[in-house]
Length: 274
Image (cartoon, rainbow, N blue to C red):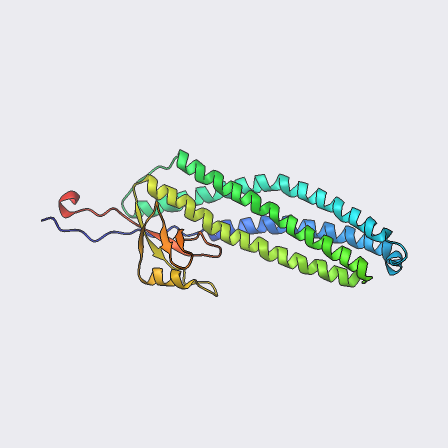
């Protein structure tokens, strides 16, 4: 009887910190440019209308004027983001694919395997999905920020509040938007690496992976901690059934999940290995 050899594993492909930092930097610079523009024009319009705002009970025209200013800013910056999102989303997908392929090739080479990756149909499908998701997320940044600014302006006018109060409120919304941009960069870097690498594993015949918990984050998911501790092995094509999420998932799929997959090479018997 042929003895079964112990399954061999390879190092996991982890998200590239440089890609995340570069992506975050581009998101942050575009957001800062929008915030500076919005703050400048809203402050200028509000300052010009301050005397009328004090007498708002007698004349509602300041609210209409400021709403027109904010609406103009919304149109301008939403258009700017619509144009930037396609380019930035494509750049991120291309960079992520290149880095994950390069890293995986290096890992395989150290394991005694030599491969050349091409843009296959499954890989292109995954690549396009990464672009689409990132374009949508990039466009959501100005939508949320500008909606908040519009609300702050209208409430400030209606309550007769001063410019300092409005400026602080807009600055707070900017802080929220910056945190969201940082989350998008971190989370998408994790997701893109995971999905693109998963396709490559299947293309070269790796069908199973072992769950590796990141041991990071302030509030780790208990089910993911247990899966890592138990060294759960799952089919790459299907994912692992997460009892807490109540569905099959892959490492890095859920928001803020930093887990990764350890590829398990196909098991050979001793006679097959000869």
